[in-house]
Image (cartoon, rainbow, N blue to C red; front, side):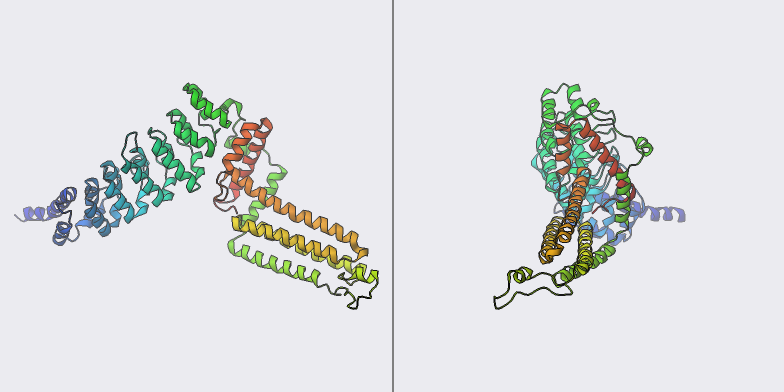
Length: 489
């Protein structure tokens, strides 16, 4: 009798859990939560019982899967961990809301916790993958609204890949829905995430490959302007190869007009082993030294360098404008000779002193300006500062040349030309660095540089151009070996 009583006592939580799941899946006519709290009052630990198992069909799964929005949010508020828990079938509550096409419930869960869009379920698919997969041809506007809301509310969800290494852009290319394709690609452009279009799935296919495979004309027409058109998959086929294999004349025509080439017309792809076997050159060695410098240049150290460089530039600029011997003054009475008038505003110092002082001050100013150029971040507002530095340097050199005595004009001219050349070269190298970086690693302030430059080179360039791009890729690999992701500046 005692054993039977104990067994009944042990089964009470189980019965209550079943009752709670049944209630969550059906709700009541008013979609209220009174019954939920009645069950919790009888069994205070009942929600924790669900949380013990790594995979469980929780009341939140039942409520979301049946479209009980208010109850689902109440449960999510009580147990936020339920939102990330997968049931035995590998689905989160948000997955089930989408599968049941309960759009209101899905949007409510999204509003409660945006990060739930990134929860991976069966096959590694996130709710974003699921939402994209449901936007098939002929779907209603609610499906597109959910997809758009997911992208807008949680932009980082696009980084999540399923077990086939596919992003949401890969998925949307195979659903035969032009509206969904335009939605996703326009979002990619608006948030400057064009780099996503270069990601490859398990077969090495980019979204452009899949667009050609599935006959997605809308996706093809958009992506030829914003994506690399000559990437090769694991079978070394470009999108043009696939278009010709599938006898898609219209797609092949669009690709050729954009500069697409066949895989066998491109330079042989360098393997990882081939790269490691290749010898280094002078440029690669110089870049390696530069990368080591960047790696060690922390934010605090950069601030210190900027402060010191600005102080040196200020001191050297002031020293030339106010030289130790002063400057010649014009005669206030207007009776000065032509020689005296010509000497007005010139530095008062001997030739030996001039040749020691001015070149040294100019060298200090030039090197400090070069250091400021290299240390400043490559952001739009800092590019304006770069331009200001160039004008400041020119005004300094022009003032230095104007204030130099006639007998020192040759030295002043040589110093002017040398310093100006160094500063302009430093500025040009910095700009080239950012454009070269953007050629393979998009920057938010150059969102289309990669595509424009690469596709243009393939369209109008020959073998030499391809060799140049291959060399730049080699330099990029050298940077990535030393610098962690996001360390470029």
